[in-house]
Length: 129
Image 1 (cartoon, rainbow, N blue to C red):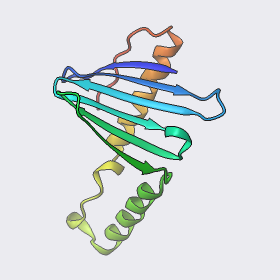
Image 2: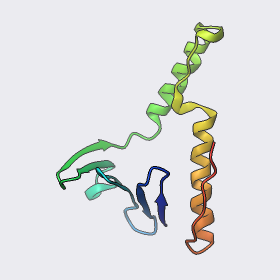
Image 3: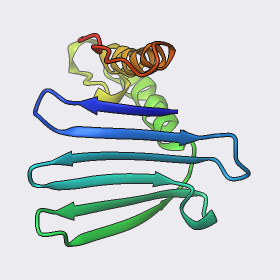
Image 4: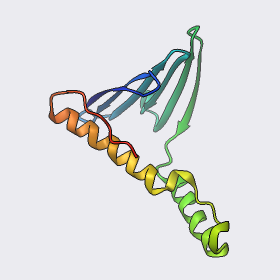
């Protein structure tokens, strides 16, 4: 799967996913005027993500993050449930990443990627939420 993106702020990106190989590969790269961010899953046979930030001068800072599945998301979800139980009413502020809007944005992006693929790579506008 290959997906090209053009963000509202002028940045361009590419998403590449290969699943028909012995070691599935996912690569996400966003290029901006001040540098490039690249996230690569399955780096050199390691189970995790290599995150590389290239500045405008070409200098690179990279960090490797082991893949832990959805552990952090589940922790945030359980924390929100616990906090909401303890803090009744308007005092509770949920984790932003777990909002319905963020979930809808994720689904809209996946939907646009699949639609673009079914239309032989034609440009598709992602629904805004």
